[in-house]
Structure formats: C-alpha cells, structure tokens
Image (cartoon, rainbow, N blue to C red; front, side):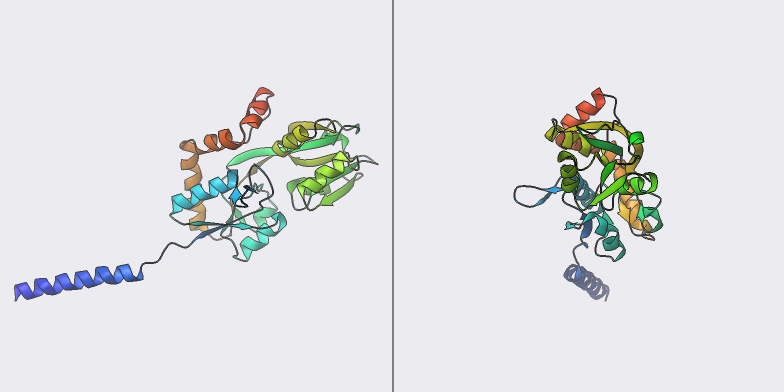
Length: 263
C-alpha cells in the first residue's frame, strides 16, 4: 500500500512537471519606443538595424527584466501618444522629463543630464540665448522638443520656425534663413563640427535638463524595475562604457572646456 502511494505521488509529480513544461510561455517582449533619427543615441546601422546608445540601454534593460526587446521606431512627437495607447511599454528616446510631460506620463529616475544650447549661423550677430528675443530674429526649433517649448514660452518678438526634423532645422541655419537652432548641447556640438565654417556653437547650456525613461502612469511595478536597473547599470559602469563607445570625442571636448557632460 505504501509503495503504491509512493508510485502514485511520483506519477503525479512527473505529470505536473511535464504539464508545467507544456504550458510554459516565453516572457512578453518589452516594446521600447524611440525615434531612430538622433545619432549616436537613436539611429540605424548600415544594415538598417536599430543602433546607438539608447538601443544598447534598452537591450540591457531587457536582459535585466528577462524580456526580449522590440524597438518600435516612432516619430518623436508620437512617442507619448504611442505609450498612452499601449503600442509601446516604455520610451527610451533622449526624452527630457518635464513637468508638462509628467502630467500625462510617468518617468523613471533621470539617467542623463543635458541642456539646451545654440547652433548659430556664422553671419548672425547672436552670441547667446539672451539675444534671441528681438525683432527680426529667426529661431529654428524641432517639433515636440523642449527647445520648441522654451522658445514658445520665452521668445515673444522673434519668429519661430518649427521643423519636423533636426536636419531641416540645421539647414535653415546653414542657409542663413535662421539665426540659431535651439537643441541639446551634444547635437549642437556634432552639427557644428560638421559645418564649422558656416556655424558657431554656444554649448554651455542656458537651460539644464535631464533625460529619463517614459512610462505609463500607474505602471508602478515596471517603474520600480526600471529604476532598479538604472541604479545597477550605473554602479556597474554601464553608462561609462556607453560614453566611451559612442561619445569619446564629445566627452573629451566637453570635459576640457568645463561643459557638463551627459552621463
């Protein structure tokens, strides 16, 4: 009788194990929204695959969560609507955490600091943000960015050119149709290096900002997990490695000139 009971228990355990294996499912993918047009943070490689700092960060987050990562390429001003509509689970796209955005989505702890700077046309008399708000000044901004928000709230006499892409805004400066383009200091540096004879760069941030992971309001567990990941990733030197891999030249220049660096 005892042997029969033991055999029955063993058989039940085996069936349970086999049954558990048959219904086991892979972890849900983590769908990360970003606009793949902002190198070296969000871009594509020569084969058209997602690449850059934010892609590496998303992949590391996926490993931390034990979830495969799917990158969803979404226009920047469509990222928050995509998040709220549950088309993506989070946003990692060089997004500044602002009070305005925090009214509709949640943010992780900041993972990077930056600020607004100016790419200035060589022939323009402008030397700083304080000189932008004047009659006759033309200022380019990218749609949906904090540069646009700052300009709309601050510049009452200058004319704003609101463009869909960074490239279009830079072109306005290069061709002399805009005095300056308001964007983050790292991008201003990169564009000035590409067009050093036609532009000047005011790199010291006139408005400091920080980037964070965008999340749905109420998704408290994922927010906790993301914050846990960011802390461990930083402690393990992950951000330092990303800076050395993608931003070595910029990091050296900013450090030499006393300009706050991103990580």
